Length: 197
Image (cartoon, rainbow, N blue to C red):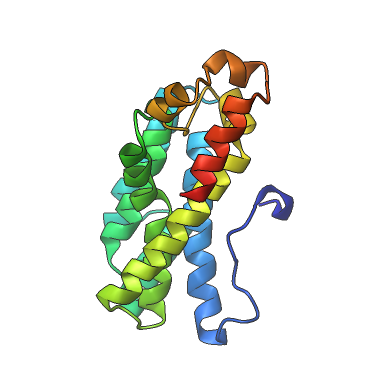
């Protein structure tokens, strides 16, 4: 995998205890490769979903080295398998859902696309109180939203808009504005509103 391809997911940092570097790297490779099924290459949607469904099946009966590693770290570190399923659900949603009616829909996506990673890391560190989960979810959701707001043009090129449709209407920003990359007063107010959230 090309290192330049990846953005801001911290991968097996030297700041991690040595015993956790390998499981963090496995989680990262799983999430990155599954996300790539949804976003990269020229596969039609049906093929993308097939690849993600194959990962789902392999979470229970792994047949490839990566999924065998996932099952091993799940067993060794008592990680909830559902969190891996949540990630796959979010990536599958990326294939079929291209617009979000409101912020609640965006947050539900973040609950499955970003928050599972933070929760998996907390489980690795044996920090699993409800307070720690809430704090991690807040950070992970914020990072996901930052990614959305910085990548509006990239996502629009894939015909995907994470900006809530009701907020776009409220600030008089249309899809034509996104297509034309118009930086209007409405656009500035819309983005300022999302960032403030």
